[in-house]
Length: 194
Image 1 (spheres, rainbow, N blue to C red):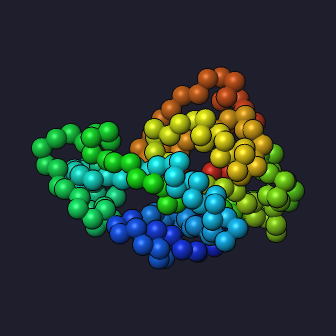
Image 2 (tube, rainbow, N blue to C red; image 1 turned 180 degrees about the vertical axis):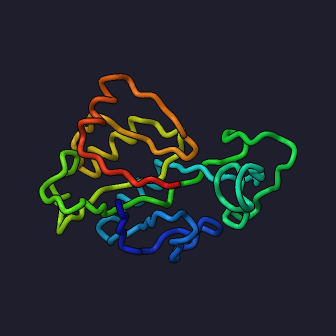
């Protein structure tokens, strides 16, 4: 599956300024495409949702290259990051919450299928094999009620039957049988990063 996203402006990981930063976040492109009419929504998101940023570079000895335990190289940490050589990396201790700056619209290639996604809102029609969606970068400590309000009240999405959180480093996870069957029967196409 390919991710096709319009490149807009996005806050830079290191200094918080708006500029193009496609390579700083990951190989999956993300963008903020905020129109004037969406300014209130952008303010709401930045006031109510946090992301986590690593503030202690802890070298991952198992990685190829100079990566931190958080998965990013040292030069992609925020300004003022300390080097940690003695303590075991722990997200609660070695990261801090900051207002999120990665949210907006994303287009997924729909592998030639046309129609409407079961989980999409009324305005999220597929166009020429592309499926529009919403995304937001969140802290793992995000309140689920606030996220639900964003999805249903602000983004006008239908109430989801299942929400899957994509977490870096989760190699194996187990689902209860009803959810596992739902996923097996669903028409899902997910990217795989090796």
